[in-house]
Amino acid sequence: MQSDEKPVRFFARHFVRLCGMAVTHDIDGNETKQYLNYSAFIISYEGHWTLVTAGHIIEDIEKLYAAGGRFADVALDDSAAADATCVYPLPFDYQSAPKMHIFDEENGIDIGLIALSNFYCQGLIKNNIEPLSEQSWQIDTPAEFDAYWLFGLPAERVIDQGNGGKVGYVMLHLNLVEDIPVDMRKPFPRFYAQITDKGSLKSIEGMSGGPIFGIKAQADDRQFYWLVAVQSGWRSDIGLVTACPINAFFECIRSEMAAKGLIY
Image 1 (spheres, rainbow, N blue to C red):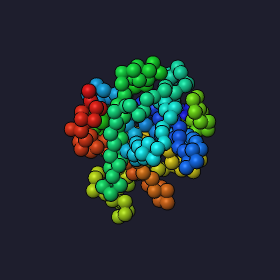
Image 2: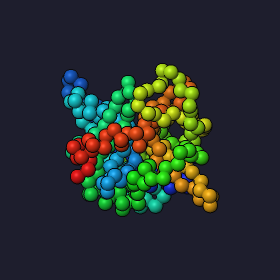
Image 3: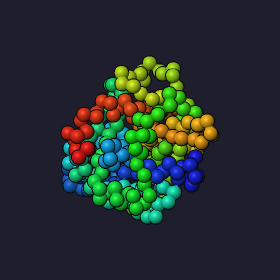
Image 4: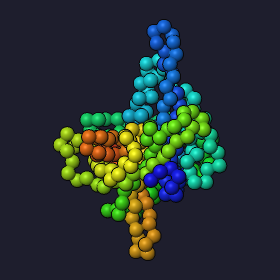
């Protein structure tokens, strides 16, 4: 499903694109800029809004700073929601924001959290962004779902770069996979699924950090959705998506969140 379809616009109210410029210098002092674009979404945890993305994204940005570069002109693009009133991204002080991440390829953990102050929350609210509360992944979660969908922004769908850039969000239908290739199995619980149809997409690069939703129909035919996992990896040769289950992740980092400033 493409960005102009109603279901995409509906789920986009939870989605925020993290974007900015990677600024580096060579040995002669010449400056190079590269546009960075990341999938992310908003949750509310114990009343505090937090930006969720893949852990390897935060690690890559940290490596940029460690090498003497910087993440400049950072912004939160909240313009994809159906009732969004402003098309311009919200400038964001990424470096000062409390954050934490775990990127452990060997054990299969890949998720990151960035705390949002009330200033940014109010800006997102004005553009009709709604966080996913704990209820969306902790309360009455079905043992099985009727369908799974991955939401995100493929890199190839970022047509224009910078403020007001034109982007194409997508939702991809997933089928759970239980027969996991031996080389992809990890000690930490992981979500594995096959994309049923990529359409015209060549790759899902850029969708890391996007939410995976589980959809379940009730007895009265109403459909409800829960946050299931955060997408982090992709085996293009076999079309297999890997993701970090949100419940399993919060179980392992709950005690660290206060120490990292993600719960005030």
